[in-house]
Length: 212
Image (cartoon, rainbow, N blue to C red; front, side):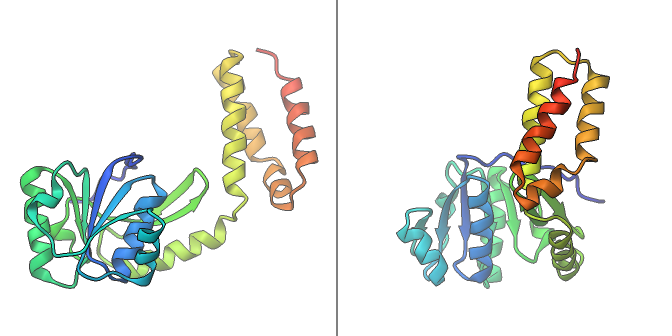
């Protein structure tokens, strides 16, 4: 059976990462980028995680994992080098009905973490369903090269225009045509060039010709 892809809202959600190595650090950074409240449980942590603790971006419990660590937790990631510890995390999370990912063990997880490319609110995820993480990482790098940084601003701009058209009661067919034409326009290139005057002039011109 395959996986059902979805995006989960983690803003303000309590999430736990068990482990303090490089893999755990990458998982923590991913959770923070989604606005999660992150606690790391591990006797030792990386220098990068120590910096996050110092900056009060995460909370660190300096010991091994205990079952009660999952009280009130929405999601947990097991990222230790100990199979026994990871198994304990998996069993406790399953008992509580908590979302759990055990690194490098799809069979011990009820969700997997895809390779992710972020450009502002544009999020592209790719996965091999746990079959080949190296291919996932390779595809993610290729997608990063295909999607430049300017796409973040492009998405924000299109979103604001869409909201404006909705508020003005523009009919769906007309609205979709306007957005499609904007997507196919030089807007993205102007954004990448920082030519915001041209962007503003073009938007004013397009919206000025938009009857309901």
